[in-house]
Structure formats: C-alpha cells, structure tokens
Length: 111
Image 1 (tube, rainbow, N blue to C red):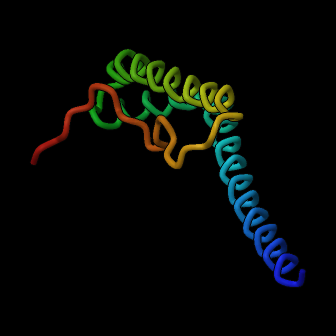
Image 2 (spheres, rainbow, N blue to C red; image 1 turned 120 degrees about the horizontal axis):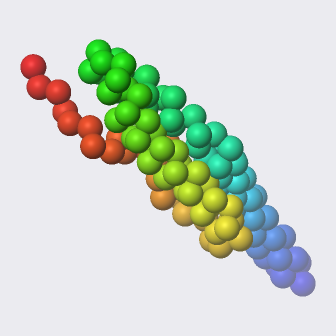
C-alpha cells in the first residue's frame, strides 16, 4: 500500500510539472498573439523609415516603404490573429512568422 501511495505521488508531481510547462507555453503564445495583433500597424512607419534611410530618397520611402509596411503589417496582424484563433490548439515552439519578419522585396547590398 505504501508503494502505491509513493507511485501515485510521483505520478502526480510529474503530471503537475508537465501541466505547468504547457501553461507557460500557452502564456507565451498568448503574449505573442497580443503583441502582433495590437502592434502590427507599427510595421508601416518602420518600413517607411528604413526605405528612406537605405535609399536616401524620401519619395521612395513614402511609396515603396508604405507598400512594404502595409504588407508587413498585414502579415504581422494576421499572424497574431491566427495565434489567437489557434490558442486552444496544442502550442508549437516556433511562431508562424518570426519577430524579425521577412523584409519583402529587399535586396542585399554588396560592397
């Protein structure tokens, strides 16, 4: 009887530890979803500034940068909404879209 009680206690500790780690993963997913959904629009001024700085041309920043920013904002916001919708599903380690975002249409500068 004593062995059964020890095994039951050991199993409950293991299950509790696994539950806490799953809860922490879900909290991370919820936090990422909230940030991406609420702050997706910040990609627009960020892209305008980056294109203007890279090209030294404010007109390019306001046209090309605006289009890139809108595309990045849409991607980030959609990723956040997808995380909210899939929150009840089993969490994955890596987000669908990384925090650094892929810069659409950028070309590597060569020296």
